[in-house]
Length: 349
Image 1 (cartoon, helix red, strand yellow):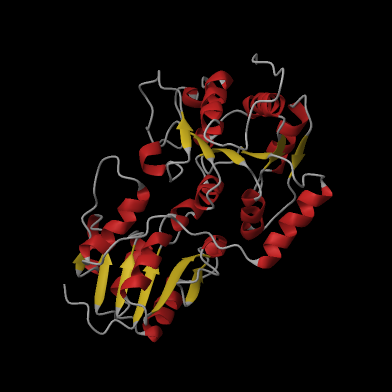
Image 2: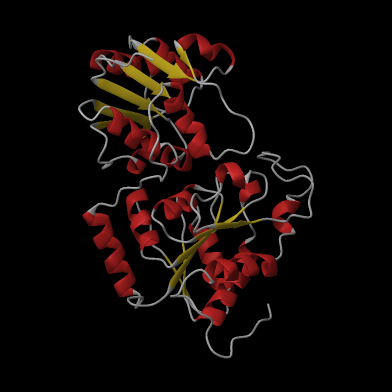
């Protein structure tokens, strides 16, 4: 494919936090191929922290679905005169932005009518490829070498200081900290709060670890519920920006999380991560990297349904036993020399 005179590139991934993060290897590989080009990224405003500060990007354009018009974004994109646009989202809005951009090369996935917005079609691979490879297929279609696979989450110095101050204020300096993340965009992806409380007690007792509970917008009550139902002490993090949350995660020895943005942030920061799965496919959406594990209720035949509302009581989560998740955590912890069982620990839940 002829890719001469590529001076301005736009990558589009509007949402969500985890999906935006899993698209960042595309940016790094594009920079390797076009080191002198300016590469911009457009995403929803709430996900901007995922790519703001990315060293391979020139700028980040944000779009607020509630307040910004597509017309304004189209005008902004046209003014920048991009040579290449890679639409990794390919929904109606991103396809229209791409199709009306004036860019010479427009790559995207052929979902329904959106294929007409692109002059380079990315064949969407079915099956159990990870979302990272799904995104990188755009570069393979463009005959661009792929050598980077690890997502990149930027940590700025102010957020790192925020995390350091909070952990110091809670006497967590020098301690083995394990973060529990009960959040999830769909309720069907959320393991029970009481289960998390039991798991937190087990980890704390067995390994002498200090437990912190993570939360995002609208989730503080869930975090407090876990803290209140644990027998051993746990700390609930304060309200944070996405960048501050990433900095706190970076100070953890391990993260246990539902399938969510914070799970992917932890894995991108090379924090050993245990993902809890049910309606989504861990081979496609699991925490990326060999140092991470995932667990689910393998006895069920309705796994990977991708339903945001469950007609049978969300049994993939309600029937996932604490013992099974603890066994998966023990396997993950066994990979770390810094995480050994405490003496005389109890093995009972």
